[in-house]
Image (cartoon, rainbow, N blue to C red):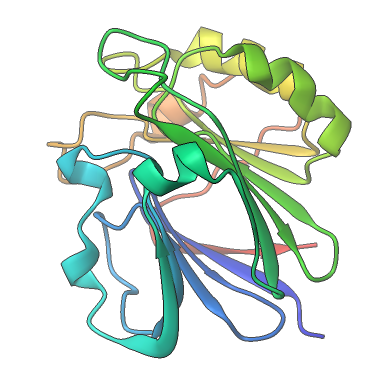
Length: 202
């Protein structure tokens, strides 16, 4: 089985190619890299900067689209090549905890990825340490969601092996990134990805 490859497209947008060569998109909006046919599309909530599904021009015949509204009701999915679990997200004035989700993805090789979605601290984060997550993405724009300090505290709570800041600036910022802010994400085992950078999950 090949290793899992993750492309950080910018803002809250991720593309993952699993060891089985299945393609997963999460919160399509920013950057490039939407050319691979989708096997799975996930959204965390309904704000415009997370639901640009039209960017994904090609989908496999059995492509699964799991929108946040469905994930709030059916929290667990086993698609063979990945297990998806919806977890709490939101919990601030801009994002209702009743309308948003984050995701924990478990790949075929057992590696685990946590994507916070747009959020502030949630009660469920305390339980995620038991998952022994390998890589975790934490939003930290400090405008619509938690700021860098709160995100770093959440990272300590979740206890992932690698903690990555994302959703760092306002969605209207064309760069979708700030290295200065990323470097102020004072989480243990911090890992900084810039838009367009690929990561091997191992």
